[in-house]
Image (cartoon, rainbow, N blue to C red; front, side):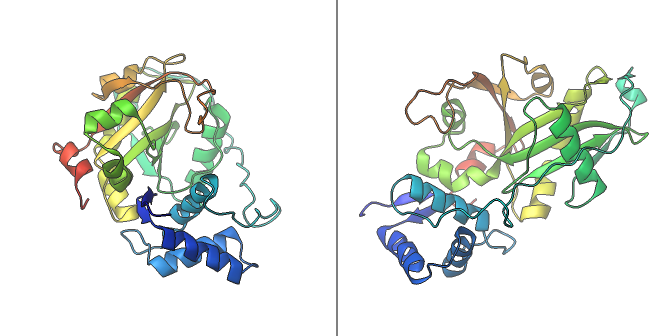
Length: 294
């Protein structure tokens, strides 16, 4: 291998692949997790808070395996520590209609969901039960928000996670070429879930919630991960939704997807066409997202 690949924002050379292969030969008892942890240590691969980028390393290994560069150890049984977490039901809750004017619910409470708390049980359980895509677990950098009214009644859940790896209309709008995108992708976050509970019917609530989040998410992300995000993105399934709340909250519609998924290497998987939206969090978002040293 003579060329340089960029995977998970890191340059990978032939010597790196040879080192990974040597680690597996010398340590046949290692599992995939142990291998990714060792790579983080050897490469001093850490996030802005100094924590090992273990999830990025695991993803990098998977991409190398899919590309035919190496063969990873077999996955361990689901009975082990990597067993998928079962989402518990949310606490018992009323589903009486919440209607009326937005002013009657304010001030709203915007809570960042912390692991192993009652808020996490509410968040995970509500998303799993009421969102049409369901919910399993969250990996990588992400923020979860639980929105309640002034009486403490849950109204909405929002999940922000990893940005889409590629999106032609988004990348053209920002001015991203491949290497620039790979270097700065973590400075963009995707609103992958937005659930307004089905018994909540309050005009303008959804766009108001988006406004509340947009004014604080940079600070929340900085506090959790040691770096900011400069813009938000989302993909709206046009067969189900019109994207009205995003438009009302001044998100920019950039175009539409091509009806493919990230795993559609043979161009044979048909997926719903989605409208692409972006919300800049800073005035100079293009410069921030194209910076050589974000």
